[in-house]
Amino acid sequence: MPFKYGLELLAVAGILGFCALFLYTSSIMSNAEFAGSDTVGSSQIAELTGKSIEDYQPLIWQWVPPSGEIESALFAIQAAIGGVLVGWVFGYWKGQKKAA
Amino acid sequence: MHIMEGFLPWQWCLVWWIIATPCLVFGVYQLKKVLEADREALPLLGVTGGFIFILSSLKLPSVTGSCSHPTGTGLSAFCFGPWVTSVICAIVLLFQSLFLAHGGLSVLGANIVSMGIVGPLVGWTIYRVLRDTRVDMYLTVFLAVAFADLFTYVVTSLELALAYPAEVGGIASSFILFLGIFAVTQVPLAIVEGIVLTLIFKYIVQLKPDILSQLQVFPKEKITSAGSVA
Image (cartoon, rainbow over all chains, first blue to last red; front, side):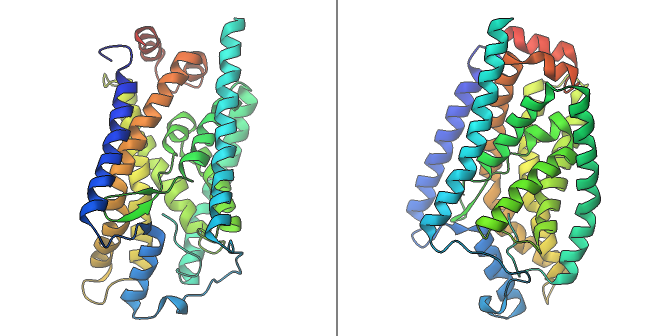
């Protein structure tokens, strides 16, 4: 690294670049829906086989979150579990380092 | 990257489960061995696993006009190897198929193979080739993470192409079709994920360099020299 905060700068630049790219593409692609690639992939399967999406039923019964709100809450819980783990460990290491 | 429940014929579900199961069993065995050898590896496992939880829940928009999520598997792949990573991924993917209807129990095997096994294996291989060379440690980390992410989606495309060959052009042409949906969307995400996790790795080097040299993640000289500059 040429200087101390090279990676931090690169990360900020990367994230800003990503946002700029999104703002640009979403402004020129007026019909983009920004659906999940899972969904787009599934429609592609339906197109390839000439069936409709409804013909694909779960092989094993599956609970589906009743609404997008509930789904996003569950995703937030998933991220929170990860965040707690990461924060806890970094704090633990920081404390260890201080005590040493 | 999930294949959705019901979208893979049962024969293929079975094939991917048969491939995934021995990898998971070996992963559990390796995990036990690592933790028995050194309890201080557990916090590192927590951090690398934590990032899989966080990053795989973030669905980000991309240039193709659809959304996809990073995988976060790279850190764990080069710190603990692809097999241990497959176990953590299996937990995340199980959570998502039970509570979020992303993926599903029948396609779980296929999703574990792409996100938990082949993706991390590709990242780990790149890392393993570059580890003992003079290539910069952070560049190695970036490449391992970015390719672990990208190849997850390449494998998903391949899994779908094998199950759904196009009428004209067969497997190859539907592979290209699915690559266009999954892998192209993923390129910018993989690059950003690579940079962000490299930064996280720098913090691990600063805070806890000894666990990285104990687990022989990188040669000691590389870790010490990186730690002294940063």
